[in-house]
Length: 205
Image (cartoon, rainbow, N blue to C red; front, side, top):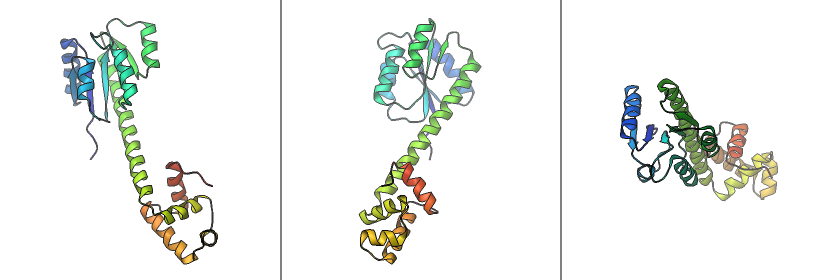
């Protein structure tokens, strides 16, 4: 089951949090509000789908410092910065630090919603790609040592009889290992197997 997307609103101004929360909730989006950057960091957990709306000027950890900390933690959620005192240098710094976009208060609600939808689409795509990478890694790990040897030989373009000679086993045994590799990797053809191995980071010898 795919993870439900959550939009985190981080702002020390309660009225601002509630206003954004009402707007987004009215559009069927799930939100959580945080009165500080520290509160977000304490409650975020390992969520992989969603986005963060963070005010720039907050007591304690600022929005820009939060952006830096999220980067250090490897947080995959896109971040959109919001401020009532924005200027060009601040916007440039936020974008360089990894922010997806930068909005000044009063925020154009529809423009923000459009950007949030783009952020959620980006987040879902990234999470989906990560799930695929993890599944592929599990398939690779399921290969026996001999199956991995055969898979590498296939990646190198070796024929079954060549693989048999290289490994000192019968061609029939190679065919069995190759069948097992195809089955474990859920590959439909040799070309498909090569694509999967390359996606897993394998390089032909």
